Amino acid sequence: MPALNELYQEIILDHNKSPRNFRKMPDATRKVEGYNPLCGDHYTVYVKLEDDIIKDISFEGAGCAISKASASVMSATVKGKTKAEAEELFESFHTLVTGKMDGMAEISTLGKLAAFSGVSEFPARVKCATLAWHTLKAALEAKEEVVTTE
Ligand code: ZN
Image (tube, rainbow, N blue to C red; front, top):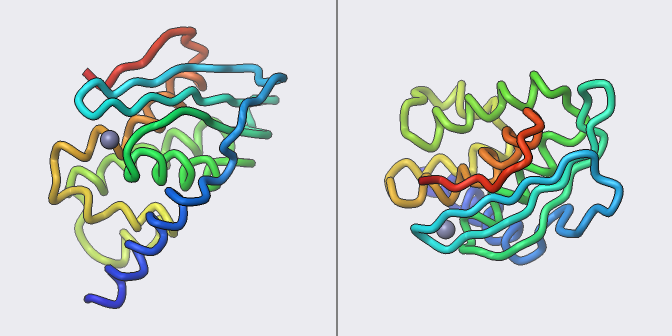
């Protein structure tokens, strides 16, 4: 389905060029750094967690197009969600990018996250696509540490 692939490509290009929620958050309640040494992607994820709800989320840092677009789409997707919902989305996203999700119906429920379905064809890129998510997970679990994908 070339039309769909083009749409996915466009989402990634757009979020890489103009990443959403790309800023420091001085009043964040959680802040975790994520690093992918294989590619050099390096981000800090800021979360404002209130009563288990992600009231606000932002990130800053640098890395490849996939890692940056993924952090951007993630931030837009999980804002306003509960901790549990965000963790569930990460599970689905991980299943998607590792190529274990089958069926367009299931993939299409992921909204913009589905744009990363092509990543499953490039195993080295899976770490780029999931870096921000791993970092978010550590932030939600209140782990004050540096996350690496190794
Ligand atoms: Zn990368």
